[in-house]
Amino acid sequence: MQKICLIILTCLFLSSCGDEKKEKDTVEKVEVIEKPIVEAYGFNLDDFVVLKDTVRNGDSFGDLMIKNKVDYQKIFKISTEFKDTFDVRRIKIGKPYAILKSKDTSEIAQFFIYEDDRINYTVVDLRDSVIAYRGKKNVKYVERVASGVINSNLSTAINEQGIDYGVTNNLSEIYAWSIDFFRLQKGDRFKVLYKEKYINDSIYAGAEPIEAAFFEHNGESFYAFAYQTDSLNNVTDYYNEEAKNLRRTFLKAPVEFSRISSRYNLNRRIAYYGYKVRPHKGTDYAAPIGTPILATANGTVVESTRRGGNGKFVKIQHNGTYSTQYLHMKNQNVKKGQYVHQGDVIGWIGMTGNSGGPHVCYRFWKNGQQVDPLREKLPAAEPLADSLRVGYFDFMNPIKAKLDSVPYTEVKTEVEVKEQEQEQQLTRK
Image (cartoon, rainbow, N blue to C red; front, side):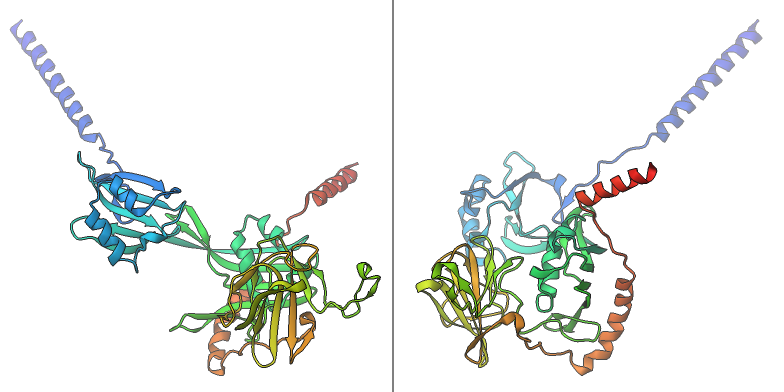
């Protein structure tokens, strides 16, 4: 009997030891899941009390700092000693900012971070010795290829594919000297190579300048390749497949994405004047009031005033041969004697003077005579230097081959989709 009891006790002991071992093994296998570190602007945000907001109407840097217990001496030092890095007078309504405060009962602001744009930001260190510096978020660049066929206009063809509107503007700027975008034909086609920017791999931050493009307009082909000709001064221009500069000394038009409402016409007759000949020596571009008017070439402003039927206008002397004039402005943005560059905003569309609707009357002089700019063969910019041609072709050829291999994407209109569906139904019957 004693032997039987001993055996039973031994079994119970071994069983309990086994259970303890199993329990121990189970405990050892439990995984500890660590809380992920939240990082931004180069900081571990878990180390701070974080306040995120946007600049509101009436906000000033000083007010924001006082609310977060920053003393006046530091505010004064930031405002006076760091203007080159962070000018407190230029914080804008709607811009995001973050204040990192100490993780104690005082919650005193230690860092102020102002987002200049989606990628760039400025950090103001508010601790013992105040400093300010700039930083950048991590950006991922993704190459994108896009193409399209024009059914109505360039903007529609691009926007229907979900492509950044900035690509439309960039494309119009590249071909501003060679293609009249007010006269695009249905069936014109385009292809573009560019990069999109993403913050933290997922937040879209815009498109980079176009690297290469192809545009077929009215049966004529136009290539464009971005090529850096001066790395020291970061000078990049667009050249075609023959290394010719696409740029001209004059833009085709002084307004982007407008329409010509009245052309240069020396034999124009107007009913108001009894159908008498009243020559129109300008080209009218209709656009909404407030649309920017651009200088079509570099030059010096020789007039910026208001006079009679011209209304408010600007006249620019480009050189000894050419000058241009821009009439009926709402307001001018330049003064007499000021030097302007091609593409600078010199004023805004208005209706001052004799004007039946909002537009700019663009006048063009050659050797003192008013001429039709759309019929002028405008001089080209400087060609690519001979010393750069071999390098350019080595750079351009593989990109051209890639561009040529891109198929066209055609987005059908609602009418075309319905017509196609009707054709398919008839075919089934």
